[in-house]
Length: 167
Image (cartoon, rainbow, N blue to C red; front, side, top):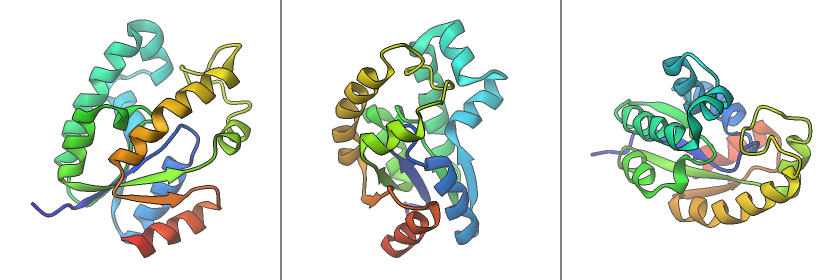
């Protein structure tokens, strides 16, 4: 089957939603933010899902969403930060799409997320330490999953242009 979707992966705060929306607009495709997709289905925020039901339940919702979204045609999908750390999600999404890693140094991400309190995995006093550990553990998995890697430490328009040049 021809791969027909574009899946953006990368660490939280790297610009998947912003770049994804812009890229979809430029390519005449639909845009779906996986976290927002899950929030609409569950009628609650990701933070509330984590608080009420735990990370395990959220990861199951994420697996379900990956399966559902992989069946769509002509969409740009901003995958959640943890989605492509699970081989099952990589397998299902890569069957019908190209996975593009938005690569950005952890220092730039930390700067972007300095005042962000909406990320359940980082909403804690040792945020910087946890972010670094999570980043270091996830980056090799992102790189392994990606068909294409682009430098996301630029403006959203520059990142979008680089992706369009690569695809």
